[in-house]
Amino acid sequence: MTRRPRVSRAVYWAVVAFLFFPLLVLLFYSFNEGKGFQWMGFSLRWYQKLFSNSRELWASVENSLIIGLSAATVSTVIGTLGAIGLNWYKFFGKKYIQAVSFIPLILPEIVIGVSLLIFFASNLRGIGTVLDGLAATAPLGVAQLLMVLAIPFHVELGMGTILVAHISFTLPFVILMVLARLSEFDYSIIEAARDLGAKELDILFRIIIPISIPGILSGFLTAFTLSLEDFVVTLFVQGPNSQTLPLYIYGHVKKGLPPEVNAFSVILIVFTMVLMFSVRNLLKYMVKSK
Amino acid sequence: MKKNYGTWYTLPLAVWISLFFVIPIAIVLIYSVLTRDYTGGVIWKFSLDSFSALANSSFIRATATTVFIALVSTAITIVLALPVAYYMARSRSNTILLLLVVVPFWVNFLIRVYAWMAVLGQEGFLNDLIRWMGLTNEPVTFLFNIWAVIIVHVYAYLPYAILPLFTTIEKFDFGLLEAARDLGASHVKSLTKIMLPNVQSGIITAVLFTFIPILGSYAIPDLIGGTDSTMLGTIVALNLRTGNNWPLASAISVVLTIITSVGLLLYFLYNQRLEKVHLQFQEETK
Image (cartoon, rainbow over all chains, first blue to last red; front, side):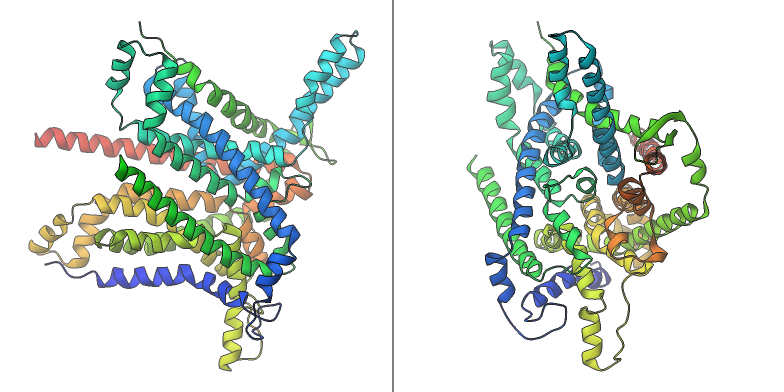
Protein backbone atom coordinates (compact mmCIF):
# COMPACT_ATOMS: atom_id res chain seq x y z
CA MET A 1 0.00 0.00 0.00
CA THR A 2 1.22 3.47 -0.83
CA ARG A 3 0.39 6.25 1.53
CA ARG A 4 -2.77 8.18 0.79
CA PRO A 5 -1.83 11.41 -0.95
CA ARG A 6 -2.62 13.66 1.99
CA VAL A 7 -0.40 16.62 1.16
CA SER A 8 -1.42 16.75 -2.48
CA ARG A 9 -5.08 16.47 -1.53
CA ALA A 10 -4.78 19.43 0.81
CA VAL A 11 -3.02 21.48 -1.88
CA TYR A 12 -5.65 20.49 -4.44
CA TRP A 13 -8.55 21.71 -2.35
CA ALA A 14 -6.69 24.84 -1.32
CA VAL A 15 -6.06 25.63 -5.00
CA VAL A 16 -9.70 25.00 -5.92
CA ALA A 17 -10.75 27.33 -3.09
CA PHE A 18 -8.26 29.92 -4.40
CA LEU A 19 -9.69 29.58 -7.93
CA PHE A 20 -13.31 29.97 -6.82
CA PHE A 21 -12.80 32.57 -4.11
CA PRO A 22 -12.79 35.78 -6.25
CA LEU A 23 -15.75 34.51 -8.27
CA LEU A 24 -17.73 33.88 -5.09
CA VAL A 25 -16.90 37.42 -4.02
CA LEU A 26 -18.39 38.67 -7.30
CA LEU A 27 -21.45 36.52 -6.69
CA PHE A 28 -21.75 38.02 -3.22
CA TYR A 29 -21.56 41.63 -4.48
CA SER A 30 -23.98 40.97 -7.31
CA PHE A 31 -26.69 40.86 -4.64
CA ASN A 32 -25.49 44.01 -2.93
CA GLU A 33 -27.97 46.85 -2.57
CA GLY A 34 -25.16 49.43 -2.72
CA LYS A 35 -23.19 50.52 -5.76
CA GLY A 36 -19.66 49.86 -4.57
CA PHE A 37 -18.04 46.99 -2.73
CA GLN A 38 -19.52 47.93 0.62
CA TRP A 39 -22.30 45.68 1.80
CA MET A 40 -25.58 47.59 2.07
CA GLY A 41 -28.05 44.72 2.16
CA PHE A 42 -29.54 42.16 -0.16
CA SER A 43 -31.12 43.26 -3.42
CA LEU A 44 -31.77 42.04 -6.93
CA ARG A 45 -31.72 45.52 -8.43
CA TRP A 46 -28.56 44.94 -10.48
CA TYR A 47 -30.07 41.90 -12.13
CA GLN A 48 -33.08 44.01 -12.94
CA LYS A 49 -30.93 46.81 -14.31
CA LEU A 50 -28.90 44.33 -16.37
CA PHE A 51 -31.99 43.30 -18.31
CA SER A 52 -33.66 46.66 -18.53
CA ASN A 53 -31.03 49.33 -18.82
CA SER A 54 -27.58 48.14 -19.92
CA ARG A 55 -27.44 48.86 -23.65
CA GLU A 56 -23.68 49.38 -23.86
CA LEU A 57 -22.91 46.10 -22.10
CA TRP A 58 -25.22 44.07 -24.33
CA ALA A 59 -23.93 45.80 -27.47
CA SER A 60 -20.41 44.74 -26.52
CA VAL A 61 -21.61 41.19 -25.93
CA GLU A 62 -23.22 41.23 -29.37
CA ASN A 63 -19.97 42.42 -30.99
CA SER A 64 -18.04 39.73 -29.17
CA LEU A 65 -20.44 37.04 -30.36
CA ILE A 66 -20.40 38.28 -33.99
CA ILE A 67 -16.62 38.36 -34.07
CA GLY A 68 -16.29 35.07 -32.18
CA LEU A 69 -18.63 33.13 -34.46
CA SER A 70 -17.24 34.55 -37.72
CA ALA A 71 -13.60 34.20 -36.65
CA ALA A 72 -14.18 30.62 -35.48
CA THR A 73 -15.95 29.71 -38.74
CA VAL A 74 -13.28 31.10 -41.08
CA SER A 75 -10.50 29.80 -38.89
CA THR A 76 -12.06 26.32 -38.80
CA VAL A 77 -12.40 26.14 -42.60
CA ILE A 78 -8.85 27.36 -43.34
CA GLY A 79 -7.35 25.40 -40.46
CA THR A 80 -9.11 22.12 -41.30
CA LEU A 81 -8.04 22.22 -44.95
CA GLY A 82 -4.53 23.15 -43.87
CA ALA A 83 -4.36 20.29 -41.38
CA ILE A 84 -5.49 17.78 -44.03
CA GLY A 85 -2.78 19.01 -46.39
CA LEU A 86 -0.10 18.97 -43.70
CA ASN A 87 -1.05 15.53 -42.43
CA TRP A 88 -1.06 13.51 -45.64
CA TYR A 89 0.85 15.30 -48.34
CA LYS A 90 4.39 16.28 -49.16
CA PHE A 91 4.71 19.44 -51.18
CA PHE A 92 6.88 22.45 -51.78
CA GLY A 93 6.91 24.83 -48.82
CA LYS A 94 5.50 22.35 -46.28
CA LYS A 95 8.27 23.03 -43.76
CA TYR A 96 7.62 26.78 -44.03
CA ILE A 97 3.89 26.39 -43.40
CA GLN A 98 4.47 24.02 -40.50
CA ALA A 99 6.94 26.39 -38.90
CA VAL A 100 5.01 29.63 -39.25
CA SER A 101 1.60 28.15 -38.40
CA PHE A 102 2.71 27.25 -34.92
CA ILE A 103 4.77 30.29 -33.97
CA PRO A 104 1.68 32.36 -33.01
CA LEU A 105 0.91 29.68 -30.40
CA ILE A 106 3.94 30.54 -28.43
CA LEU A 107 4.65 34.20 -29.19
CA PRO A 108 3.52 36.63 -26.46
CA GLU A 109 0.12 37.95 -27.47
CA ILE A 110 1.23 41.53 -27.25
CA VAL A 111 3.76 41.00 -30.05
CA ILE A 112 0.98 39.76 -32.33
CA GLY A 113 -1.11 42.79 -31.39
CA VAL A 114 1.72 45.22 -32.09
CA SER A 115 2.61 43.65 -35.42
CA LEU A 116 -0.97 43.61 -36.67
CA LEU A 117 -1.66 47.18 -35.60
CA ILE A 118 1.46 48.44 -37.36
CA PHE A 119 0.56 46.33 -40.39
CA PHE A 120 -3.01 47.64 -40.60
CA ALA A 121 -2.33 51.21 -39.63
CA SER A 122 0.67 51.98 -41.74
CA ASN A 123 1.63 49.67 -44.54
CA LEU A 124 -1.72 48.83 -45.97
CA ARG A 125 -2.72 52.48 -45.88
CA GLY A 126 0.63 53.33 -47.45
CA ILE A 127 -0.01 51.02 -50.38
CA GLY A 128 -3.49 52.53 -50.74
CA THR A 129 -2.09 56.04 -50.85
CA VAL A 130 0.53 55.06 -53.44
CA LEU A 131 -2.14 53.47 -55.62
CA ASP A 132 -4.32 56.57 -55.30
CA GLY A 133 -1.36 58.73 -56.25
CA LEU A 134 -0.69 56.63 -59.31
CA ALA A 135 -4.37 56.78 -60.25
CA ALA A 136 -4.27 60.59 -60.20
CA THR A 137 -1.65 60.67 -62.96
CA ALA A 138 -2.69 57.56 -64.89
CA PRO A 139 -4.74 57.70 -68.09
CA LEU A 140 -8.49 57.11 -67.85
CA GLY A 141 -9.43 53.46 -67.52
CA VAL A 142 -6.18 52.55 -65.79
CA ALA A 143 -6.96 55.19 -63.17
CA GLN A 144 -10.33 53.60 -62.36
CA LEU A 145 -8.70 50.20 -62.11
CA LEU A 146 -6.04 51.50 -59.73
CA MET A 147 -8.65 53.19 -57.55
CA VAL A 148 -10.63 49.98 -57.27
CA LEU A 149 -7.43 48.11 -56.43
CA ALA A 150 -6.73 50.65 -53.68
CA ILE A 151 -10.06 50.06 -51.89
CA PRO A 152 -9.01 47.06 -49.79
CA PHE A 153 -5.93 48.94 -48.68
CA HIS A 154 -7.83 51.80 -47.09
CA VAL A 155 -8.15 49.93 -43.86
CA GLU A 156 -10.22 51.41 -41.06
CA LEU A 157 -9.57 49.86 -37.66
CA GLY A 158 -12.72 48.23 -36.33
CA MET A 159 -14.73 45.01 -36.47
CA GLY A 160 -12.97 43.94 -39.69
CA THR A 161 -9.45 44.24 -38.34
CA ILE A 162 -10.44 42.54 -35.06
CA LEU A 163 -11.91 39.68 -37.11
CA VAL A 164 -8.73 39.26 -39.17
CA ALA A 165 -6.59 39.32 -36.03
CA HIS A 166 -8.76 36.74 -34.27
CA ILE A 167 -8.68 34.39 -37.26
CA SER A 168 -4.89 34.64 -37.29
CA PHE A 169 -4.27 33.75 -33.67
CA THR A 170 -6.93 31.02 -33.48
CA LEU A 171 -5.72 29.19 -36.63
CA PRO A 172 -2.89 27.24 -34.93
CA PHE A 173 -5.32 25.84 -32.35
CA VAL A 174 -7.73 24.58 -35.01
CA ILE A 175 -4.84 22.99 -36.95
CA LEU A 176 -3.60 21.26 -33.80
CA MET A 177 -7.03 19.85 -32.89
CA VAL A 178 -7.77 18.57 -36.40
CA LEU A 179 -4.24 17.15 -36.81
CA ALA A 180 -4.65 15.24 -33.55
CA ARG A 181 -7.80 13.62 -34.90
CA LEU A 182 -6.39 12.92 -38.38
CA SER A 183 -3.27 11.26 -37.04
CA GLU A 184 -5.41 8.46 -35.57
CA PHE A 185 -6.94 7.82 -38.97
CA ASP A 186 -5.77 5.05 -41.31
CA TYR A 187 -4.66 6.49 -44.65
CA SER A 188 -5.22 3.19 -46.46
CA ILE A 189 -8.98 3.85 -46.32
CA ILE A 190 -8.43 6.89 -48.50
CA GLU A 191 -6.20 4.91 -50.85
CA ALA A 192 -8.89 2.26 -51.10
CA ALA A 193 -11.50 4.89 -51.94
CA ARG A 194 -9.19 6.35 -54.55
CA ASP A 195 -8.52 2.93 -56.09
CA LEU A 196 -12.25 2.42 -56.32
CA GLY A 197 -12.48 5.60 -58.35
CA ALA A 198 -13.53 8.23 -55.79
CA LYS A 199 -12.72 11.80 -56.75
CA GLU A 200 -10.72 13.99 -54.38
CA LEU A 201 -13.78 16.09 -53.51
CA ASP A 202 -15.78 12.93 -52.72
CA ILE A 203 -12.98 11.76 -50.50
CA LEU A 204 -12.87 15.13 -48.75
CA PHE A 205 -16.59 15.48 -48.09
CA ARG A 206 -17.55 11.83 -47.62
CA ILE A 207 -14.57 10.47 -45.73
CA ILE A 208 -12.11 12.98 -44.36
CA ILE A 209 -14.50 15.62 -43.02
CA PRO A 210 -17.01 13.20 -41.43
CA ILE A 211 -14.17 11.34 -39.77
CA SER A 212 -12.55 14.48 -38.38
CA ILE A 213 -15.79 16.05 -37.08
CA PRO A 214 -14.79 15.73 -33.39
CA GLY A 215 -11.48 17.48 -34.12
CA ILE A 216 -13.19 20.13 -36.24
CA LEU A 217 -15.81 20.74 -33.53
CA SER A 218 -13.29 21.09 -30.73
CA GLY A 219 -11.19 23.34 -32.99
CA PHE A 220 -14.23 25.54 -33.61
CA LEU A 221 -15.12 25.72 -29.92
CA THR A 222 -11.55 26.50 -28.92
CA ALA A 223 -11.33 29.24 -31.56
CA PHE A 224 -14.66 30.66 -30.42
CA THR A 225 -13.67 30.74 -26.75
CA LEU A 226 -10.25 32.21 -27.48
CA SER A 227 -11.87 34.92 -29.56
CA LEU A 228 -14.36 35.79 -26.79
CA GLU A 229 -11.53 35.82 -24.25
CA ASP A 230 -9.07 37.91 -26.17
CA PHE A 231 -8.22 41.28 -24.79
CA VAL A 232 -4.67 42.32 -25.70
CA VAL A 233 -4.74 41.80 -29.47
CA THR A 234 -8.24 43.29 -29.66
CA LEU A 235 -7.14 46.33 -27.70
CA PHE A 236 -4.54 47.11 -30.34
CA VAL A 237 -6.56 46.57 -33.50
CA GLN A 238 -9.88 48.00 -32.26
CA GLY A 239 -11.54 51.02 -33.82
CA PRO A 240 -14.60 53.14 -33.15
CA ASN A 241 -17.87 51.16 -32.77
CA SER A 242 -16.12 47.86 -32.27
CA GLN A 243 -16.23 47.50 -28.50
CA THR A 244 -16.12 43.87 -27.46
CA LEU A 245 -16.98 42.60 -23.97
CA PRO A 246 -13.36 42.57 -22.71
CA LEU A 247 -12.86 46.09 -24.09
CA TYR A 248 -16.05 47.24 -22.37
CA ILE A 249 -14.86 45.87 -19.03
CA TYR A 250 -11.40 47.36 -19.50
CA GLY A 251 -12.86 50.74 -20.43
CA HIS A 252 -14.98 50.92 -17.28
CA VAL A 253 -12.89 49.09 -14.75
CA LYS A 254 -10.64 51.98 -13.77
CA LYS A 255 -13.43 54.30 -12.78
CA GLY A 256 -15.36 51.45 -11.19
CA LEU A 257 -17.43 49.00 -13.18
CA PRO A 258 -21.19 49.43 -13.20
CA PRO A 259 -22.50 46.94 -10.59
CA GLU A 260 -24.64 45.14 -13.14
CA VAL A 261 -21.37 43.67 -14.46
CA ASN A 262 -21.25 41.57 -11.26
CA ALA A 263 -24.72 40.29 -12.07
CA PHE A 264 -23.70 39.72 -15.67
CA SER A 265 -20.64 37.71 -14.62
CA VAL A 266 -22.77 35.47 -12.43
CA ILE A 267 -25.20 34.83 -15.26
CA LEU A 268 -22.29 34.23 -17.64
CA ILE A 269 -20.76 31.64 -15.29
CA VAL A 270 -24.04 29.78 -14.92
CA PHE A 271 -24.72 29.99 -18.66
CA THR A 272 -21.25 28.70 -19.65
CA MET A 273 -21.53 25.85 -17.18
CA VAL A 274 -24.90 24.78 -18.56
CA LEU A 275 -23.58 25.11 -22.13
CA MET A 276 -20.41 23.15 -21.43
CA PHE A 277 -22.23 20.33 -19.72
CA SER A 278 -24.75 20.05 -22.53
CA VAL A 279 -22.00 20.09 -25.19
CA ARG A 280 -20.14 17.44 -23.22
CA ASN A 281 -23.21 15.26 -22.94
CA LEU A 282 -23.99 15.82 -26.61
CA LEU A 283 -20.49 14.70 -27.59
CA LYS A 284 -20.79 11.66 -25.31
CA TYR A 285 -24.12 10.85 -26.90
CA MET A 286 -22.65 11.22 -30.40
CA VAL A 287 -19.74 8.95 -29.57
CA LYS A 288 -22.04 6.33 -28.04
CA SER A 289 -24.51 6.30 -30.92
CA LYS A 290 -21.75 5.53 -33.44
CA MET B 1 -1.56 8.01 -60.60
CA LYS B 2 -1.79 9.73 -57.26
CA LYS B 3 -2.21 13.45 -57.59
CA ASN B 4 -0.79 15.65 -54.90
CA TYR B 5 -3.39 18.04 -53.54
CA GLY B 6 -1.29 19.18 -50.59
CA THR B 7 -0.59 22.59 -52.07
CA TRP B 8 -4.28 23.19 -52.71
CA TYR B 9 -5.33 22.14 -49.24
CA THR B 10 -2.80 24.37 -47.57
CA LEU B 11 -3.02 27.30 -49.98
CA PRO B 12 -5.56 29.38 -47.97
CA LEU B 13 -3.58 28.73 -44.80
CA ALA B 14 -0.28 29.64 -46.45
CA VAL B 15 -1.70 32.87 -47.87
CA TRP B 16 -3.40 33.88 -44.64
CA ILE B 17 -0.51 33.14 -42.33
CA SER B 18 1.99 34.84 -44.65
CA LEU B 19 -0.10 37.95 -45.11
CA PHE B 20 -1.33 38.39 -41.54
CA PHE B 21 1.47 36.91 -39.53
CA VAL B 22 4.81 36.65 -41.33
CA ILE B 23 4.66 40.01 -43.07
CA PRO B 24 3.50 41.95 -39.97
CA ILE B 25 6.28 40.38 -37.89
CA ALA B 26 8.79 41.26 -40.63
CA ILE B 27 7.50 44.84 -40.58
CA VAL B 28 8.03 45.01 -36.82
CA LEU B 29 11.63 43.87 -37.34
CA ILE B 30 12.18 46.58 -39.97
CA TYR B 31 10.42 49.29 -37.96
CA SER B 32 12.59 48.62 -34.94
CA VAL B 33 15.58 50.02 -36.85
CA LEU B 34 13.86 53.04 -38.40
CA THR B 35 13.56 56.62 -37.18
CA ARG B 36 10.65 57.74 -35.05
CA ASP B 37 8.10 60.09 -36.57
CA TYR B 38 6.61 62.21 -33.79
CA THR B 39 3.21 62.35 -35.44
CA GLY B 40 3.01 58.55 -35.36
CA GLY B 41 4.52 56.06 -37.76
CA VAL B 42 8.11 56.12 -38.94
CA ILE B 43 10.55 57.97 -41.15
CA TRP B 44 12.35 55.62 -43.51
CA LYS B 45 15.83 56.29 -42.25
CA PHE B 46 18.01 53.67 -40.58
CA SER B 47 18.51 54.31 -36.88
CA LEU B 48 19.42 52.31 -33.82
CA ASP B 49 17.88 54.94 -31.53
CA SER B 50 15.19 52.67 -30.20
CA PHE B 51 17.65 49.93 -29.33
CA SER B 52 19.93 52.40 -27.57
CA ALA B 53 16.83 53.68 -25.74
CA LEU B 54 16.54 50.17 -24.38
CA ALA B 55 19.76 50.79 -22.44
CA ASN B 56 17.87 53.49 -20.55
CA SER B 57 17.60 52.79 -16.82
CA SER B 58 13.80 52.88 -16.68
CA PHE B 59 13.64 50.31 -19.46
CA ILE B 60 16.20 48.07 -17.77
CA ARG B 61 14.19 48.29 -14.58
CA ALA B 62 11.01 47.31 -16.45
CA THR B 63 12.81 44.35 -18.03
CA ALA B 64 14.09 43.24 -14.63
CA THR B 65 10.60 43.65 -13.12
CA THR B 66 9.04 41.70 -15.98
CA VAL B 67 11.50 38.82 -15.71
CA PHE B 68 11.18 38.83 -11.91
CA ILE B 69 7.38 38.75 -12.00
CA ALA B 70 7.40 36.06 -14.70
CA LEU B 71 9.93 33.91 -12.82
CA VAL B 72 8.30 34.17 -9.39
CA SER B 73 4.76 33.68 -10.73
CA THR B 74 5.86 30.70 -12.81
CA ALA B 75 7.69 29.14 -9.86
CA ILE B 76 4.68 29.52 -7.53
CA THR B 77 2.34 28.25 -10.26
CA ILE B 78 4.42 25.11 -10.88
CA VAL B 79 4.88 24.38 -7.17
CA LEU B 80 1.09 24.57 -6.70
CA ALA B 81 0.24 22.80 -9.96
CA LEU B 82 2.43 19.74 -9.34
CA PRO B 83 0.61 18.38 -6.27
CA VAL B 84 -2.74 19.36 -7.79
CA ALA B 85 -2.00 17.43 -10.99
CA TYR B 86 -0.58 14.54 -8.95
CA TYR B 87 -3.71 14.32 -6.81
CA MET B 88 -5.94 14.50 -9.89
CA ALA B 89 -3.94 11.80 -11.68
CA ARG B 90 -4.10 9.45 -8.70
CA SER B 91 -7.77 9.97 -8.01
CA ARG B 92 -10.41 7.72 -9.52
CA SER B 93 -12.92 10.53 -10.02
CA ASN B 94 -10.53 12.73 -11.94
CA THR B 95 -13.10 14.09 -14.41
CA ILE B 96 -14.87 15.94 -11.61
CA LEU B 97 -11.59 17.10 -10.11
CA LEU B 98 -10.52 18.34 -13.55
CA LEU B 99 -13.80 20.18 -14.04
CA LEU B 100 -13.45 21.94 -10.69
CA VAL B 101 -10.11 23.33 -11.83
CA VAL B 102 -11.35 24.35 -15.26
CA VAL B 103 -14.77 25.84 -14.45
CA PRO B 104 -13.45 29.16 -13.04
CA PHE B 105 -11.74 29.70 -16.38
CA TRP B 106 -14.94 29.79 -18.32
CA VAL B 107 -15.36 33.26 -16.91
CA ASN B 108 -13.94 36.00 -19.09
CA PHE B 109 -10.29 36.78 -18.33
CA LEU B 110 -10.96 40.45 -17.60
CA ILE B 111 -13.85 39.62 -15.30
CA ARG B 112 -11.46 37.35 -13.39
CA VAL B 113 -8.95 40.20 -13.07
CA TYR B 114 -11.76 42.52 -12.04
CA ALA B 115 -12.87 39.98 -9.43
CA TRP B 116 -9.46 40.35 -7.81
CA MET B 117 -9.94 44.11 -7.75
CA ALA B 118 -13.21 43.45 -5.92
CA VAL B 119 -11.30 41.30 -3.44
CA LEU B 120 -8.21 43.42 -2.89
CA GLY B 121 -9.48 46.95 -3.54
CA GLN B 122 -9.62 49.76 -0.98
CA GLU B 123 -13.35 49.24 -0.70
CA GLY B 124 -13.05 45.59 -1.49
CA PHE B 125 -13.94 42.36 0.23
CA LEU B 126 -10.78 41.94 2.32
CA ASN B 127 -11.00 45.49 3.62
CA ASP B 128 -14.68 44.97 4.38
CA LEU B 129 -13.78 41.84 6.26
CA ILE B 130 -10.99 43.52 8.23
CA ARG B 131 -13.24 46.43 9.16
CA TRP B 132 -16.05 44.08 10.14
CA MET B 133 -13.71 42.14 12.37
CA GLY B 134 -12.65 45.44 13.90
CA LEU B 135 -8.95 44.95 13.19
CA THR B 136 -8.45 48.43 11.77
CA ASN B 137 -10.47 51.33 10.49
CA GLU B 138 -7.90 52.51 7.99
CA PRO B 139 -8.32 50.85 4.60
CA VAL B 140 -5.32 48.67 3.74
CA THR B 141 -3.87 48.96 0.22
CA PHE B 142 -3.57 45.45 -1.13
CA LEU B 143 -3.67 46.48 -4.77
CA PHE B 144 -1.14 48.36 -6.88
CA ASN B 145 1.99 46.52 -5.88
CA ILE B 146 4.14 43.78 -7.32
CA TRP B 147 2.83 41.02 -5.01
CA ALA B 148 -0.76 41.63 -6.04
CA VAL B 149 0.42 41.38 -9.66
CA ILE B 150 2.13 38.07 -8.91
CA ILE B 151 -0.93 36.62 -7.13
CA VAL B 152 -3.23 37.48 -10.02
CA HIS B 153 -0.76 36.05 -12.56
CA VAL B 154 -0.61 32.81 -10.59
CA TYR B 155 -4.40 32.81 -10.53
CA ALA B 156 -4.68 33.46 -14.26
CA TYR B 157 -2.15 30.87 -15.41
CA LEU B 158 -2.63 27.98 -12.95
CA PRO B 159 -4.79 25.85 -15.28
CA TYR B 160 -2.26 26.30 -18.12
CA ALA B 161 0.24 24.58 -15.85
CA ILE B 162 -2.11 22.04 -14.28
CA LEU B 163 -3.42 20.61 -17.57
CA PRO B 164 -0.09 19.61 -19.22
CA LEU B 165 1.20 18.33 -15.87
CA PHE B 166 -1.94 16.27 -15.38
CA THR B 167 -1.66 14.65 -18.82
CA THR B 168 1.97 13.62 -18.26
CA ILE B 169 1.55 12.48 -14.65
CA GLU B 170 -1.49 10.45 -15.67
CA LYS B 171 0.73 8.40 -18.01
CA PHE B 172 3.31 7.84 -15.28
CA ASP B 173 3.52 4.31 -13.93
CA PHE B 174 2.85 4.70 -10.22
CA GLY B 175 4.11 1.16 -9.64
CA LEU B 176 7.60 2.63 -9.92
CA LEU B 177 6.93 4.65 -6.78
CA GLU B 178 5.97 1.53 -4.88
CA ALA B 179 9.07 -0.24 -6.16
CA ALA B 180 11.22 2.64 -4.91
CA ARG B 181 9.48 2.53 -1.53
CA ASP B 182 9.98 -1.23 -1.30
CA LEU B 183 13.66 -0.71 -1.97
CA GLY B 184 13.83 1.63 1.00
CA ALA B 185 13.37 5.11 -0.50
CA SER B 186 11.41 7.57 1.58
CA HIS B 187 8.08 8.87 0.28
CA VAL B 188 9.53 12.29 -0.58
CA LYS B 189 12.62 10.77 -2.14
CA SER B 190 10.60 8.43 -4.34
CA LEU B 191 8.61 11.42 -5.59
CA THR B 192 11.59 13.67 -6.27
CA LYS B 193 13.99 11.04 -7.60
CA ILE B 194 11.58 8.85 -9.57
CA MET B 195 8.49 10.80 -10.51
CA LEU B 196 9.85 14.29 -11.15
CA PRO B 197 12.48 13.17 -13.71
CA ASN B 198 9.83 11.11 -15.47
CA VAL B 199 7.38 13.98 -15.86
CA GLN B 200 10.03 16.50 -16.89
CA SER B 201 8.49 17.09 -20.31
CA GLY B 202 5.20 18.06 -18.68
CA ILE B 203 6.97 20.44 -16.31
CA ILE B 204 8.75 22.12 -19.20
CA THR B 205 5.51 22.52 -21.16
CA ALA B 206 3.84 23.96 -18.07
CA VAL B 207 6.72 26.41 -17.59
CA LEU B 208 6.49 27.56 -21.21
CA PHE B 209 2.70 27.95 -21.03
CA THR B 210 2.98 30.23 -18.02
CA PHE B 211 6.31 32.00 -18.39
CA ILE B 212 5.89 33.22 -21.97
CA PRO B 213 2.40 34.74 -21.66
CA ILE B 214 3.41 36.43 -18.40
CA LEU B 215 6.43 37.99 -20.15
CA GLY B 216 4.05 39.78 -22.53
CA SER B 217 1.37 40.47 -19.94
CA TYR B 218 -0.42 43.80 -20.17
CA ALA B 219 -3.87 43.82 -18.56
CA ILE B 220 -2.78 42.54 -15.16
CA PRO B 221 0.08 45.00 -14.47
CA ASP B 222 -2.06 47.78 -15.91
CA LEU B 223 -5.08 47.12 -13.69
CA ILE B 224 -3.59 45.46 -10.62
CA GLY B 225 -0.07 46.86 -10.57
CA GLY B 226 1.37 50.15 -9.40
CA THR B 227 4.52 52.12 -10.03
CA ASP B 228 6.72 49.26 -8.82
CA SER B 229 5.25 46.81 -11.30
CA THR B 230 5.61 48.41 -14.73
CA MET B 231 6.16 45.54 -17.15
CA LEU B 232 7.41 45.49 -20.75
CA GLY B 233 3.86 45.05 -22.03
CA THR B 234 2.81 48.26 -20.31
CA ILE B 235 5.64 50.17 -21.99
CA VAL B 236 4.85 48.70 -25.42
CA ALA B 237 1.20 49.67 -25.17
CA LEU B 238 2.06 53.14 -23.91
CA ASN B 239 4.45 53.81 -26.78
CA LEU B 240 2.18 52.42 -29.43
CA ARG B 241 -1.20 53.72 -28.34
CA THR B 242 -0.47 57.11 -26.86
CA GLY B 243 3.24 57.84 -27.13
CA ASN B 244 3.43 57.43 -30.90
CA ASN B 245 6.85 55.83 -30.69
CA TRP B 246 6.43 52.95 -33.10
CA PRO B 247 10.12 52.08 -33.49
CA LEU B 248 10.51 51.73 -29.72
CA ALA B 249 7.36 49.57 -29.43
CA SER B 250 8.75 47.45 -32.28
CA ALA B 251 12.16 47.15 -30.64
CA ILE B 252 10.61 45.94 -27.37
CA SER B 253 8.52 43.43 -29.31
CA VAL B 254 11.71 42.20 -30.97
CA VAL B 255 13.31 41.75 -27.55
CA LEU B 256 10.25 39.82 -26.30
CA THR B 257 10.34 37.65 -29.43
CA ILE B 258 14.04 36.92 -28.96
CA ILE B 259 13.57 35.92 -25.31
CA THR B 260 10.70 33.63 -26.35
CA SER B 261 12.61 32.10 -29.27
CA VAL B 262 15.64 31.30 -27.12
CA GLY B 263 13.32 29.56 -24.65
CA LEU B 264 11.69 27.58 -27.43
CA LEU B 265 14.99 26.61 -29.00
CA LEU B 266 16.23 25.26 -25.68
CA TYR B 267 12.96 23.36 -25.32
CA PHE B 268 13.31 21.68 -28.72
CA LEU B 269 16.98 20.87 -28.24
CA TYR B 270 16.18 19.39 -24.86
CA ASN B 271 13.31 17.34 -26.26
CA GLN B 272 15.52 15.98 -29.03
CA ARG B 273 18.15 14.97 -26.50
CA LEU B 274 15.46 13.35 -24.37
CA GLU B 275 14.20 11.38 -27.37
CA LYS B 276 17.73 10.23 -28.19
CA VAL B 277 18.24 9.02 -24.63
CA HIS B 278 14.95 7.13 -24.81
CA LEU B 279 15.93 5.51 -28.12
CA GLN B 280 19.31 4.52 -26.75
CA PHE B 281 17.64 3.09 -23.69
CA GLN B 282 15.27 1.05 -25.85
CA GLU B 283 18.17 -0.20 -27.97
CA GLU B 284 20.11 -1.27 -24.90
CA THR B 285 17.22 -3.07 -23.28
CA LYS B 286 16.33 -5.03 -26.42
